[in-house]
Image (cartoon, rainbow, N blue to C red):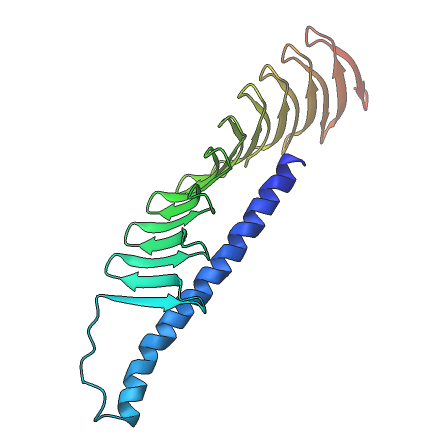
Length: 215
């Protein structure tokens, strides 16, 4: 199974658990909203003030599936394992083995894989994707979009300057900018250029070999 497929599967599972959490929280909120309505129908049976340290939702087997208290809102699976929690510090999501899957806090949003390695980060600085070794492979921020190779060097980028391609040594080999399109060799020397005034081909010493139209 490819890395992209595994990530897609994990995200799908995360979305499914999030939907369950939203449903549970919705039930809790409905129960809380129903208290004053019941009081309006039967005021002699309902006190003006309802106090509780905790609200709980149980399933048909009387297993607690959700709770709400001063610490926050928690969601549990059928095995009584906590899977999600919403507190003043943020939102936390775990798998069935209590391993962290995602975290949302003031610092940003973080997604981890089965090995607890952070794979995706999203914060005020942008979005970053990391491989299974924790090496940055792609990023999106105010400066542009970048793809990074196995050795940590940028292989391609898209910024307000244009689109650029680099080899494994970080040497620019191609670029498309407002000035035109160029191709460079392994030494970083421009060998071919296409611009508004024509096409030019150069040797390894940057001497013009051929151009069109000729001048």
